[in-house]
Image 1 (cartoon, rainbow, N blue to C red):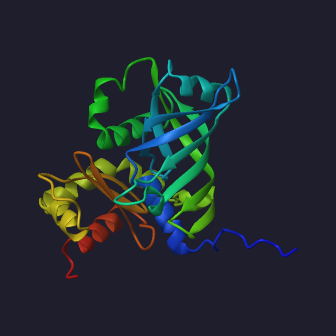
Image 2 (tube, rainbow, N blue to C red):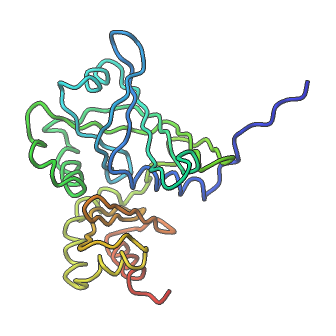
Length: 249
């Protein structure tokens, strides 16, 4: 009996880039946890952001079923990727298996994560500081990318994490970096939206930077752009963004 061919393709840089964009551009995700009472998978929906190293972040109520499940067993899976026109299965999606780490008030990452989350989800300001809410960092362990029919890939958790010595420095200066960039180029977000062929919208703004890229947002629309190489500092990020916005195509 002949061995069946593997349905998986060899993971290449294009697959890694698509997986990172599917994860980092998602404003929400389906999350699956293990019900502590029954052991059955339990699925829900959560708002999603990313930390400076690209690790996905969720904000949840301590009263929710999935939060109680994560407190008992930190294993979780995220499903990201938006269906488009036609067959939903023809569009890319990513399942990321993660280990959840709680980030409560007073944690050294809390303020950074809070700022980045609100930049993407400003309406969360209504409840983000309630005492019964907390963040989880969902560190990727491995992932499965389906980029469409016949295009399946396996990824390691490290393929989705920004492993840069500049992470902390860039995070500390992120708000100042964006503010300075906008002061020099007031139309930079609109120029980026035009260059990236974003949906037409009244106002776009930069809502996140990191060594690997940036996001722009307008209402429910969010676009992620990945740099060709990791930026080494904030000036490098500004230079990259300016070139993307204003260079001749």
